[in-house]
Image (cartoon, rainbow, N blue to C red; front, top):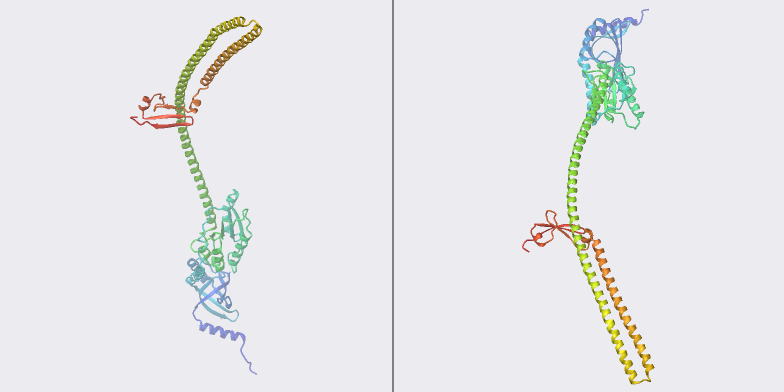
Length: 506
């Protein structure tokens, strides 16, 4: 009985023959590298295709033979700066190959570098356009760069070579207490690297604990050097959006000079390498220190100049004030001496006049008293004689008229004599009292004059309504003729001095 069907090897051989006949030459194919292995110079690849939403559409194994790899890979790396690694998209010339023992595979004999560069740039362009449409592309770039650095948050791959270069500079600043660095680690390449960087950044900011609760002066995102496709993991929309929306300036130094990632474009300041980030921080700190030193020297010099000028001005003013004070004192002494001389002269004249008036008054009082006493002495004997004579007449008449009334007449005569004597004594007492009162009044008047003379002084004299008149030279004016001969007069009153003009012709 004949066999039905064919063997597997026959089927697969037919498939291999069909594939070989259909694909006699390679076909340019767009692929994404999932995995790479190198063995004996041969490069083994796992390739895939995904839909825009990430669904897997196709997979295949591929190989670049060692002799081909030695020819095309260095050229690709020179042209793109990228290496064949997971995540990179390639336009390859693929020749399908099917072998019954090993199955389907693709042989790659050429790679178009322009496609890879275009794909990387297209990814950045898409993110850039989206951020620009949202109006946040320049948000972090437009933040004022840090004026100085005191505390910095650093995001970097753990144990990366670039981090070691950065720490070499940063530790020196920390050792002297100039700037503080807080580190958070994350993967920087591979699937999900961008999300890990974003989470590490936001968590570190949430946990930030500063003494004055202030945010860090800047966030530094750094990593060591790498191929372009290694850096392509940083071209992520969510990571770029987070940096744009961050209220803290971001410094990037991801270890490349020729190409830039999207996070370089949106960062506040971009540096080529991590060590240059540290150097830039140090330069800002040094610049602020130099400015502070220069400002201190400027302020010190200005203060010194102002102090010297103020000291010179004060010395000059003190000298001028001292000279003016000496002139004023000398003038005051001269004026005081003149016033004292005038007052002494006036007082001497007043005292002399008072002495003269008192002497005249004393003389008059004494003369009047002596006249009254002399008059009294002259009149009393006459009066007594008249009384005696009248009494004798009365006695005689009484004796002649009536001897019988002698007793009565005698009594009356005695009474009259006694009354006359009392009247005379009263008159004498009245005269003596009047003389004493006149003398007392004269003495009191003289005493008052002496007291008034003794109490004379410039202030008291001015207080009683008198005034001192001086000419323009400060000399006392005592006559109208002298007053008319000058242009202005200074009148000193009890509460101050006034200057008046003299009207000519009066």
